[in-house]
Amino acid sequence: MNELLFAAYFGGCVLVLYAQLSLVAREYRELSNRPPTFIDQLHLRLERYFGLSFRSKLIEWLYAGMWPSLERRGPSRNADRISVNTDVTLPAGTATDEIIVTHSFACGAGCSVTREVYVGGDCDIGPGSTIQAMAVDGKVAIGRGTRIVRWLDAKGDIRVEPGCGISGRITSASHISLAPGVELKSAFAALLFTQPRRDSSALPSAAVSEPVVLDARIDTWRRAGVNGARLRLLSEECMEHNGDLVLPAVRLRISLVVKGSLKIRAGSHLEGDVKAVESMWIGPHSVCVGHLTAGQHVTLGIGTTFSGVIYAERSVRLDVGCRSEGAQVAVHGDTTVTLADAVSISGKVSAGDRVVTV
Image (tube, rainbow, N blue to C red; front, side):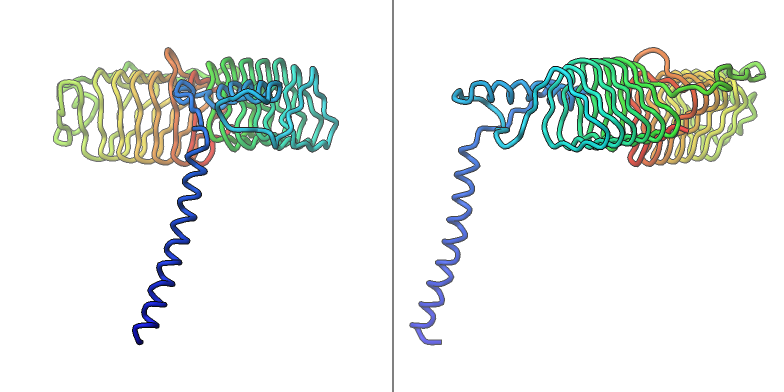
């Protein structure tokens, strides 16, 4: 290659590099001239942040539509159609791509709403409908087989009928009632409960023996039939057991770590935190005050009450009549959470795959 060809090649490379840099600089200038997106940190700290954030942004969009000449902070919605009505009733099979703002909302069976909806009053969704996202200041009734694609937030009660699927989050400042056959990702409410069957309204009582008191002393564990050689006192407030552990009805006054699976008989009272490296099964009519953590599965028997966080790296099952007591709690399974009849939770339930009611 002679000097002339080399100079031409070098010049071409410089031109290509300059063209790329000029495109990058142009995109940077456009981005730097855009107003920053406002993120309300208060909303991010709340379980209902989707609904609360949408309500605040909706006010900006409507204000911008009324006074388009004024400067405003936040994204533009000029290309979107916002329909403002006193009352909206969609006939069966209706499809709409408008952002709907209304005092009351109702739709027939098989409707499709592909944009956000704000309802100042009550809302009634027909069976088999598909709703993108919805913020409601009143009560919500979700018909059988309805699908919520993103999220639903309400200030009032939410009633979910059988066969519904909620791909995102459902939240309420009041109550959420879930019928059997509902699948969802995450739910939060002041009180979330599964609808009881007629034959599960009165739970059978369990015949339990007098619980054995367990504390930091090894001899108390021996009285419960535990091999003392497998025990190790981690602190005055925590005991460790090496291997699988089966306990009779006990009153556990300290925290417990089990390097294996744990099974505790009915009528137990667990005052401390309990962790199992593998699975954990708590017998019926027990009381769990602390947090429950397992490397595989957590199962709570019929009528068990709990007051702390329940976390499993695989699945969680709350049997008939399980309920939370006291402050708000959280229940999470990395794969599934199964809720039987008459389960009530004050707080949040979520799963990596799905939460199902059976």
